[in-house]
Image (cartoon, rainbow, N blue to C red; front, side, top):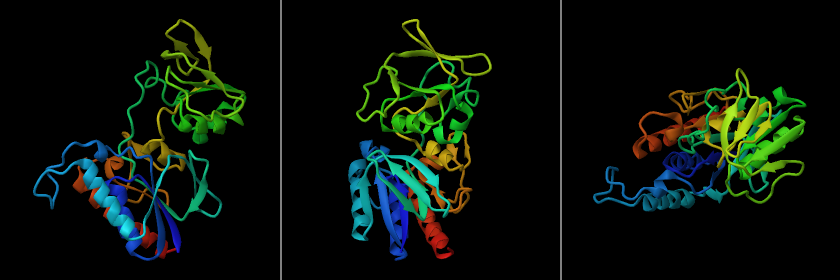
Length: 289
């Protein structure tokens, strides 16, 4: 039996888990941080099979219950990193400190969150502002860098940078700092006014008038979004969406995506279709190994 990981327990992820589990070729695990947008939807009244409006949370619970009946495992956790090992398996790490290998992975975490509204971030993207520590850490060897964030995802990015950069700062931007900060990381709890630099990042400016000189700024606020996870393994991202073909395959063999993170019609019906297609594609991929 192969091991399959689906990141996200919304309609796309759960639909994919159903089709993958029914194949009897894989052990399917769905990991979610319990932040599905469907759970926050008051009433759904345009979905097939329901004569009366149904709360989003109820629809979500019913979908998960159906997948659990088929043996799908659901885990509440936060995925912070994905890497491809020499055996071409996906090594996936979570905020709880667990790292496990999978034969195939699907990203179904919804549309990526908006970038923080800080002056200079958009202007200096690709010129010192980055969204992936593993991807870009090499460029900051023996340099000072800052990670903007205050939770597990920010800690993971800071740890990835700490072996390469001369100094790593975590800037909370005024948010409460979570427990578990890595060693040798300096915390700055001030609120940011802007990222400064002409052609490249030169400093982070704070609203109290002070500045912190750094060569790079890594954005890691909240949890790792869909596009951030895709970038970690080199999957193409365009206009804040993961690029997939009609089979929900990314350019990375064994990595799939579906739902809002791939763009298009952001409706439950579309997400369910994406999940079904991805689940079938995962099975075909595993059988071809």
